[in-house]
Length: 115
Image (cartoon, rainbow, N blue to C red; front, side, top):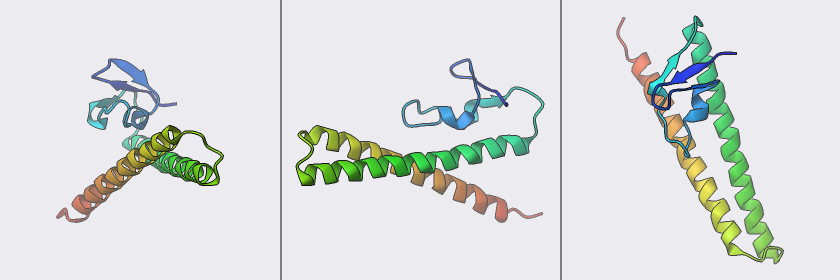
């Protein structure tokens, strides 16, 4: 298992994307590889974490939809739970779109490089 050092927090993490989330706001640029693994392994870890982020966003969106249905059917007593679920879904979706845009910008930069 690969381990990385977060320079800002001075802690070891197993996956750099785990620290790159809405709660912490840490940047991947602060992550430094600790070990002799190839760059392919780091890209693979970041890409797999990005895919995991997409499924987490889908889960939040599904939870928000379920809360809307509960409220519409009269099974929920509080609109507070709906508001929280909607905000989580919104934040997760914005984060996922931003991550996608960053990947696309990096892809375009690489494609436009002259050899």
